[in-house]
Amino acid sequence: MEKVLFNETSYCKDEKFLRFMEKYHFICEYLYKDKLKCYSANQKEADILIFILKTSSPLLLGEGNDFYGKYRILRYEFRKVFSLIKECEFKNIYPGILIYPGESSSNKRIMIKNSNDKTPLGIKVEKIDNNSEGWLLKVRNIYGTQHLLKTKEGYIIGPEEPLLLITKTYLRLFTPKKVLEMGAGTGEVSAFILKNTKNSKAYVNEKSPYLKEHLKNYLSKIFKKRVKIILGDIHKIKVPKVDLIISGIFYGELPKLMKNKGEQIKKALGKKGLFIIQSGMLENMFALTIIDPSIFPKILGWEWYNHKYDLRNHFNYVFSFFLEGELITLASQDKKIIKKIRKDLNKKIVPLKLL
Image 1 (cartoon, rainbow, N blue to C red):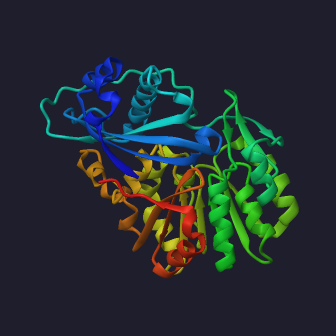
Image 2: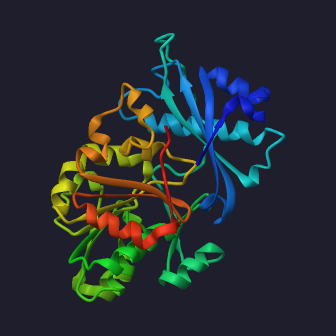
Protein backbone atom coordinates (compact mmCIF):
# COMPACT_ATOMS: atom_id res chain seq x y z
CA MET A 1 0.00 0.00 0.00
CA GLU A 2 1.16 3.51 -0.76
CA LYS A 3 1.83 5.85 2.16
CA VAL A 4 0.49 9.40 1.67
CA LEU A 5 0.98 12.45 3.92
CA PHE A 6 -2.37 13.71 5.21
CA ASN A 7 -1.44 17.37 4.63
CA GLU A 8 -0.97 16.64 0.94
CA THR A 9 -4.59 15.52 0.53
CA SER A 10 -7.76 17.59 0.13
CA TYR A 11 -9.20 16.04 3.30
CA CYS A 12 -6.93 18.15 5.52
CA LYS A 13 -8.90 21.27 4.52
CA ASP A 14 -12.42 19.89 4.84
CA GLU A 15 -14.30 21.45 7.77
CA LYS A 16 -16.48 18.40 8.52
CA PHE A 17 -13.46 16.15 8.57
CA LEU A 18 -11.51 18.52 10.81
CA ARG A 19 -14.44 18.81 13.27
CA PHE A 20 -14.54 15.02 13.58
CA MET A 21 -10.78 14.99 14.26
CA GLU A 22 -11.07 17.70 16.88
CA LYS A 23 -14.01 16.02 18.61
CA TYR A 24 -11.96 12.91 19.44
CA HIS A 25 -8.56 14.62 19.80
CA PHE A 26 -7.29 12.94 16.62
CA ILE A 27 -4.16 13.84 14.70
CA CYS A 28 -3.64 12.37 11.25
CA GLU A 29 -0.15 12.55 9.80
CA TYR A 30 -0.59 10.02 7.02
CA LEU A 31 -2.84 7.45 5.38
CA TYR A 32 -2.41 4.39 3.19
CA LYS A 33 -4.09 3.88 -0.14
CA ASP A 34 -4.41 1.20 -2.78
CA LYS A 35 -6.71 0.28 -5.66
CA LEU A 36 -8.02 -3.25 -5.18
CA LYS A 37 -11.08 -5.40 -5.76
CA CYS A 38 -13.19 -5.52 -2.63
CA TYR A 39 -16.50 -6.94 -1.41
CA SER A 40 -17.75 -3.51 -0.41
CA ALA A 41 -17.70 -2.57 -4.10
CA ASN A 42 -19.21 -5.91 -5.20
CA GLN A 43 -15.78 -7.25 -6.13
CA LYS A 44 -15.01 -4.33 -8.43
CA GLU A 45 -11.88 -2.19 -8.15
CA ALA A 46 -12.14 0.61 -5.62
CA ASP A 47 -9.83 3.02 -3.82
CA ILE A 48 -9.09 1.76 -0.32
CA LEU A 49 -8.00 4.48 2.11
CA ILE A 50 -6.79 3.71 5.63
CA PHE A 51 -6.37 6.80 7.81
CA ILE A 52 -3.90 6.42 10.68
CA LEU A 53 -5.28 8.41 13.61
CA LYS A 54 -3.40 9.26 16.78
CA THR A 55 -5.37 10.28 19.87
CA SER A 56 -4.23 12.01 23.05
CA SER A 57 -7.08 10.38 24.98
CA PRO A 58 -5.87 7.05 26.44
CA LEU A 59 -9.42 6.03 27.42
CA LEU A 60 -10.98 6.69 24.01
CA LEU A 61 -11.72 3.04 23.23
CA GLY A 62 -12.63 2.20 26.79
CA GLU A 63 -11.20 -0.60 28.87
CA GLY A 64 -11.51 -4.36 29.10
CA ASN A 65 -13.43 -6.06 26.30
CA ASP A 66 -15.47 -3.11 25.01
CA PHE A 67 -12.79 -1.67 22.69
CA TYR A 68 -14.10 -3.24 19.49
CA GLY A 69 -17.62 -1.94 20.02
CA LYS A 70 -16.25 1.58 20.61
CA TYR A 71 -14.14 1.30 17.49
CA ARG A 72 -17.18 0.30 15.40
CA ILE A 73 -19.08 3.38 16.56
CA LEU A 74 -16.13 5.60 15.63
CA ARG A 75 -15.77 3.87 12.27
CA TYR A 76 -19.45 4.43 11.49
CA GLU A 77 -19.24 8.13 12.39
CA PHE A 78 -16.03 8.51 10.40
CA ARG A 79 -17.57 6.95 7.28
CA LYS A 80 -20.65 9.14 7.65
CA VAL A 81 -18.48 12.28 7.80
CA PHE A 82 -16.36 11.06 4.92
CA SER A 83 -19.42 10.50 2.73
CA LEU A 84 -20.31 14.20 3.07
CA ILE A 85 -17.02 15.41 1.62
CA LYS A 86 -17.94 16.91 -1.74
CA GLU A 87 -14.72 15.92 -3.48
CA CYS A 88 -15.36 12.23 -2.85
CA GLU A 89 -17.22 9.86 -5.08
CA PHE A 90 -18.09 7.69 -2.13
CA LYS A 91 -19.20 4.76 -4.26
CA ASN A 92 -15.65 4.31 -5.49
CA ILE A 93 -13.81 5.06 -2.24
CA TYR A 94 -13.85 2.85 0.85
CA PRO A 95 -12.25 4.51 3.87
CA GLY A 96 -11.12 2.91 7.11
CA ILE A 97 -9.36 4.00 10.28
CA LEU A 98 -6.69 2.63 12.56
CA ILE A 99 -6.36 4.38 15.91
CA TYR A 100 -3.40 4.40 18.26
CA PRO A 101 -2.62 6.31 21.48
CA GLY A 102 -0.13 9.15 21.46
CA GLU A 103 1.15 11.11 24.43
CA SER A 104 -1.66 11.74 26.87
CA SER A 105 -2.66 15.34 27.40
CA SER A 106 -5.47 14.36 29.74
CA ASN A 107 -6.95 11.31 31.47
CA LYS A 108 -10.41 12.64 30.75
CA ARG A 109 -12.61 10.09 29.03
CA ILE A 110 -14.08 11.21 25.72
CA MET A 111 -17.61 9.85 25.47
CA ILE A 112 -18.46 7.81 22.40
CA LYS A 113 -22.20 7.76 21.93
CA ASN A 114 -24.07 4.89 20.34
CA SER A 115 -24.56 5.36 16.62
CA ASN A 116 -27.23 4.30 14.18
CA ASP A 117 -24.87 1.71 12.74
CA LYS A 118 -27.11 -1.09 11.49
CA THR A 119 -24.36 -3.52 10.48
CA PRO A 120 -24.66 -6.78 12.45
CA LEU A 121 -22.63 -7.33 15.63
CA GLY A 122 -23.58 -10.78 16.82
CA ILE A 123 -25.28 -11.67 13.58
CA LYS A 124 -28.95 -12.55 13.85
CA VAL A 125 -29.83 -14.49 10.75
CA GLU A 126 -33.27 -13.98 9.30
CA LYS A 127 -33.20 -16.54 6.52
CA ILE A 128 -31.18 -19.01 4.51
CA ASP A 129 -31.32 -18.09 0.86
CA ASN A 130 -30.54 -20.20 -2.20
CA ASN A 131 -30.45 -17.31 -4.67
CA SER A 132 -27.09 -16.10 -5.94
CA GLU A 133 -26.30 -13.21 -8.20
CA GLY A 134 -23.29 -11.09 -9.16
CA TRP A 135 -20.09 -12.21 -7.46
CA LEU A 136 -22.06 -14.77 -5.39
CA LEU A 137 -23.05 -16.51 -8.62
CA LYS A 138 -19.38 -16.69 -9.52
CA VAL A 139 -18.63 -18.28 -6.13
CA ARG A 140 -21.42 -20.82 -6.68
CA ASN A 141 -20.13 -21.74 -10.15
CA ILE A 142 -16.53 -22.21 -9.00
CA TYR A 143 -17.01 -23.83 -5.58
CA GLY A 144 -20.46 -25.42 -5.82
CA THR A 145 -21.93 -23.41 -2.94
CA GLN A 146 -25.68 -23.70 -2.44
CA HIS A 147 -26.72 -21.43 0.44
CA LEU A 148 -26.13 -17.94 1.79
CA LEU A 149 -27.40 -16.06 4.84
CA LYS A 150 -29.42 -12.87 4.94
CA THR A 151 -30.06 -10.69 7.97
CA LYS A 152 -33.24 -8.75 8.65
CA GLU A 153 -31.53 -5.65 7.27
CA GLY A 154 -30.69 -7.47 4.05
CA TYR A 155 -26.99 -8.01 4.69
CA ILE A 156 -25.57 -11.07 2.97
CA ILE A 157 -23.30 -13.18 5.17
CA GLY A 158 -21.11 -15.37 3.02
CA PRO A 159 -20.07 -17.68 1.67
CA GLU A 160 -17.01 -15.55 0.86
CA GLU A 161 -14.60 -16.57 -1.85
CA PRO A 162 -11.33 -15.99 0.10
CA LEU A 163 -12.02 -18.75 2.66
CA LEU A 164 -13.06 -21.12 -0.13
CA LEU A 165 -10.04 -20.20 -2.26
CA ILE A 166 -7.55 -20.66 0.57
CA THR A 167 -9.23 -23.97 1.46
CA LYS A 168 -9.07 -25.11 -2.16
CA THR A 169 -5.37 -24.22 -2.24
CA TYR A 170 -4.73 -26.13 1.00
CA LEU A 171 -6.49 -29.24 -0.39
CA ARG A 172 -4.31 -29.18 -3.50
CA LEU A 173 -1.26 -29.48 -1.26
CA PHE A 174 -2.45 -31.45 1.78
CA THR A 175 -5.12 -33.95 2.81
CA PRO A 176 -6.46 -33.32 6.33
CA LYS A 177 -7.76 -36.21 8.39
CA LYS A 178 -9.85 -33.93 10.59
CA VAL A 179 -11.03 -30.34 10.19
CA LEU A 180 -12.77 -27.86 12.50
CA GLU A 181 -14.76 -24.96 11.06
CA MET A 182 -15.60 -22.23 13.59
CA GLY A 183 -18.51 -19.96 12.80
CA ALA A 184 -19.55 -22.18 9.93
CA GLY A 185 -22.71 -20.32 8.93
CA THR A 186 -24.39 -22.41 6.22
CA GLY A 187 -21.46 -24.84 6.28
CA GLU A 188 -20.25 -24.22 2.73
CA VAL A 189 -16.51 -24.41 3.54
CA SER A 190 -16.97 -27.73 5.34
CA ALA A 191 -19.13 -28.98 2.47
CA PHE A 192 -16.38 -28.05 0.00
CA ILE A 193 -13.79 -29.98 2.02
CA LEU A 194 -16.00 -33.05 2.36
CA LYS A 195 -16.87 -33.04 -1.35
CA ASN A 196 -13.23 -32.81 -2.37
CA THR A 197 -11.76 -35.42 -0.02
CA LYS A 198 -12.56 -39.09 0.43
CA ASN A 199 -12.07 -39.70 4.12
CA SER A 200 -11.67 -36.32 5.81
CA LYS A 201 -13.92 -35.70 8.81
CA ALA A 202 -15.33 -32.31 9.77
CA TYR A 203 -16.33 -30.79 13.11
CA VAL A 204 -18.74 -28.00 12.22
CA ASN A 205 -19.24 -25.33 14.87
CA GLU A 206 -21.95 -22.68 14.70
CA LYS A 207 -23.27 -20.46 17.47
CA SER A 208 -26.70 -19.72 16.00
CA PRO A 209 -29.40 -22.28 16.97
CA TYR A 210 -31.28 -21.08 13.88
CA LEU A 211 -28.80 -22.97 11.69
CA LYS A 212 -28.89 -26.28 13.58
CA GLU A 213 -31.51 -28.00 11.41
CA HIS A 214 -30.05 -26.59 8.22
CA LEU A 215 -26.56 -27.96 9.01
CA LYS A 216 -28.01 -31.36 9.92
CA ASN A 217 -29.99 -31.52 6.68
CA TYR A 218 -27.27 -30.10 4.47
CA LEU A 219 -24.16 -31.79 5.90
CA SER A 220 -25.11 -34.64 8.20
CA LYS A 221 -27.60 -36.24 5.79
CA ILE A 222 -25.18 -36.10 2.87
CA PHE A 223 -21.89 -36.92 4.58
CA LYS A 224 -23.31 -38.83 7.56
CA LYS A 225 -20.53 -40.16 9.85
CA ARG A 226 -17.94 -37.80 8.37
CA VAL A 227 -19.61 -34.81 10.05
CA LYS A 228 -20.18 -33.77 13.65
CA ILE A 229 -22.26 -30.63 14.25
CA ILE A 230 -21.12 -28.72 17.37
CA LEU A 231 -23.72 -26.10 18.21
CA GLY A 232 -22.77 -23.39 20.67
CA ASP A 233 -20.32 -20.64 21.59
CA ILE A 234 -16.79 -21.71 20.59
CA HIS A 235 -15.48 -20.08 23.79
CA LYS A 236 -17.34 -22.72 25.82
CA ILE A 237 -16.40 -25.73 23.68
CA LYS A 238 -13.29 -27.88 23.92
CA VAL A 239 -11.33 -27.69 20.67
CA PRO A 240 -10.80 -31.21 19.25
CA LYS A 241 -7.48 -32.38 17.81
CA VAL A 242 -7.46 -31.65 14.07
CA ASP A 243 -5.13 -30.89 11.15
CA LEU A 244 -6.93 -27.76 10.00
CA ILE A 245 -8.98 -25.08 11.77
CA ILE A 246 -10.90 -22.49 9.76
CA SER A 247 -12.36 -19.46 11.49
CA GLY A 248 -15.24 -17.49 10.05
CA ILE A 249 -16.44 -16.13 13.40
CA PHE A 250 -17.41 -12.48 13.88
CA TYR A 251 -14.25 -10.40 13.56
CA GLY A 252 -14.72 -8.58 16.85
CA GLU A 253 -14.60 -11.94 18.65
CA LEU A 254 -11.10 -12.80 17.38
CA PRO A 255 -9.10 -11.11 20.19
CA LYS A 256 -11.28 -12.84 22.79
CA LEU A 257 -10.88 -16.15 20.93
CA MET A 258 -7.09 -15.92 21.02
CA LYS A 259 -7.04 -14.84 24.66
CA ASN A 260 -9.35 -17.62 25.84
CA LYS A 261 -8.65 -20.38 23.35
CA GLY A 262 -5.24 -19.62 21.85
CA GLU A 263 -3.32 -22.31 23.73
CA GLN A 264 -6.09 -24.86 23.21
CA ILE A 265 -6.09 -24.16 19.45
CA LYS A 266 -2.30 -24.48 19.41
CA LYS A 267 -2.39 -27.87 21.13
CA ALA A 268 -5.27 -29.10 18.94
CA LEU A 269 -3.27 -28.38 15.77
CA GLY A 270 0.05 -29.76 16.99
CA LYS A 271 3.28 -29.29 15.03
CA LYS A 272 1.86 -29.75 11.52
CA GLY A 273 -1.58 -28.13 11.72
CA LEU A 274 -2.80 -24.92 10.09
CA PHE A 275 -5.08 -22.19 11.43
CA ILE A 276 -6.88 -20.14 8.75
CA ILE A 277 -8.60 -16.93 9.87
CA GLN A 278 -10.82 -14.57 7.93
CA SER A 279 -10.84 -11.19 9.66
CA GLY A 280 -12.73 -8.70 7.55
CA MET A 281 -12.31 -6.25 4.72
CA LEU A 282 -9.20 -4.19 4.08
CA GLU A 283 -10.89 -0.96 5.17
CA ASN A 284 -11.68 -2.65 8.51
CA MET A 285 -8.28 -3.85 9.71
CA PHE A 286 -8.70 -3.13 13.41
CA ALA A 287 -9.49 -6.68 14.57
CA LEU A 288 -6.65 -8.11 12.49
CA THR A 289 -4.05 -5.70 13.90
CA ILE A 290 -4.98 -6.86 17.41
CA ILE A 291 -4.31 -10.55 16.69
CA ASP A 292 -1.38 -9.78 14.36
CA PRO A 293 0.18 -6.56 15.71
CA SER A 294 3.24 -7.00 13.48
CA ILE A 295 1.13 -5.32 10.77
CA PHE A 296 0.60 -2.21 12.87
CA PRO A 297 2.81 -2.28 16.01
CA LYS A 298 1.37 1.01 17.33
CA ILE A 299 -1.74 -0.92 18.37
CA LEU A 300 0.36 -2.29 21.26
CA GLY A 301 0.32 1.15 22.89
CA TRP A 302 -3.26 0.78 24.18
CA GLU A 303 -3.53 0.05 27.90
CA TRP A 304 -6.19 -2.59 27.25
CA TYR A 305 -3.94 -4.57 24.90
CA ASN A 306 -3.25 -8.11 26.18
CA HIS A 307 -0.31 -10.07 24.76
CA LYS A 308 -2.54 -13.16 24.67
CA TYR A 309 -4.42 -11.59 21.75
CA ASP A 310 -1.28 -11.96 19.62
CA LEU A 311 -1.17 -15.08 17.43
CA ARG A 312 2.62 -15.13 17.70
CA ASN A 313 2.36 -16.03 21.38
CA HIS A 314 0.82 -19.30 20.23
CA PHE A 315 2.29 -19.94 16.75
CA ASN A 316 5.83 -19.73 15.41
CA TYR A 317 4.76 -18.56 11.97
CA VAL A 318 2.01 -16.08 11.12
CA PHE A 319 1.28 -14.51 7.74
CA SER A 320 -1.52 -12.00 7.06
CA PHE A 321 -2.53 -10.80 3.62
CA PHE A 322 -5.33 -9.46 1.43
CA LEU A 323 -6.94 -12.04 -0.83
CA GLU A 324 -9.84 -11.55 -3.25
CA GLY A 325 -11.62 -8.95 -1.15
CA GLU A 326 -10.89 -10.14 2.40
CA LEU A 327 -8.15 -10.23 5.03
CA ILE A 328 -6.78 -13.72 5.61
CA THR A 329 -4.26 -14.93 8.20
CA LEU A 330 -2.39 -18.24 8.28
CA ALA A 331 -0.80 -19.50 11.51
CA SER A 332 1.21 -22.67 12.08
CA GLN A 333 4.22 -24.14 13.87
CA ASP A 334 5.44 -25.39 10.49
CA LYS A 335 6.87 -22.73 8.18
CA LYS A 336 6.79 -25.05 5.16
CA ILE A 337 2.98 -25.28 5.18
CA ILE A 338 2.57 -21.50 4.94
CA LYS A 339 5.39 -21.24 2.40
CA LYS A 340 3.74 -23.78 0.07
CA ILE A 341 0.38 -22.00 0.21
CA ARG A 342 2.02 -18.62 -0.47
CA LYS A 343 3.85 -20.04 -3.46
CA ASP A 344 0.71 -21.64 -4.86
CA LEU A 345 -1.40 -18.47 -4.57
CA ASN A 346 1.51 -16.26 -5.69
CA LYS A 347 0.25 -13.01 -7.30
CA LYS A 348 -3.24 -13.23 -5.81
CA ILE A 349 -1.77 -12.36 -2.42
CA VAL A 350 -1.32 -8.73 -1.32
CA PRO A 351 0.97 -8.70 1.77
CA LEU A 352 0.18 -6.28 4.61
CA LYS A 353 2.55 -4.06 6.57
CA LEU A 354 1.63 -0.69 8.06
CA LEU A 355 4.30 1.14 10.05
